[in-house]
Image (cartoon, rainbow, N blue to C red; front, side, top):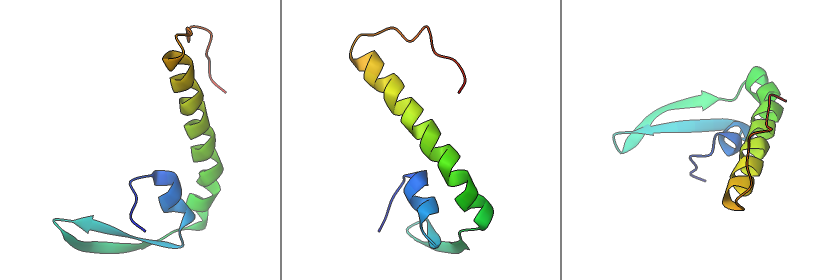
Length: 66
């Protein structure tokens, strides 16, 4: 599967990097990358919620970290 989605990429055991229309290198997904997956998913969900609020015409003045 080809993807530009970093979450889907980190879910894989291996991924390859395509550069200049060819395979540039293979990367084995590490345990540390897998551990960061939950944080990536949380950030992605927060961004989705912000986009939804903006598209609905809601203000986003009350957002903060975490």
